[in-house]
Image 1 (tube, rainbow, N blue to C red):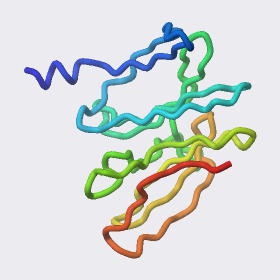
Image 2: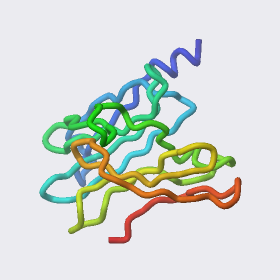
Image 3: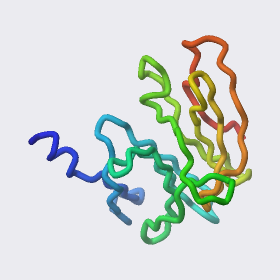
Image 4: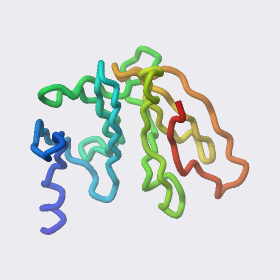
Length: 163
């Protein structure tokens, strides 16, 4: 019964001003309680966006959703493959499962100020393969690159932009 109550509680995403007054608030889709949620804020003044990576209960898939930060939080897109099929991007890793010890900090990261408007994240490819994947604010995949693991215990444990 306690587990059912936890699953019924929907996570809430809210924005606040410097006086901690709530500016906007929305409920995110129901997610697996055992999986963490990653949030990343794009601080560009012309187009402030918030990306949320969560593992949905409904279809057991990790998704990246992008919200526009205006007077209210409005969902703009969900991460999709670049092949035009409209499929969700598969095998997105979160920071809780990025390493076998569960201590990784891998998540999602927006490009720095005065650079492109891309969001980066880690995708699992096979047993040892990892890709760094980029998506645009419209949710479409925009390239990426492969990282080869030389040993089984090697893992991506952080992701950040230096631009």
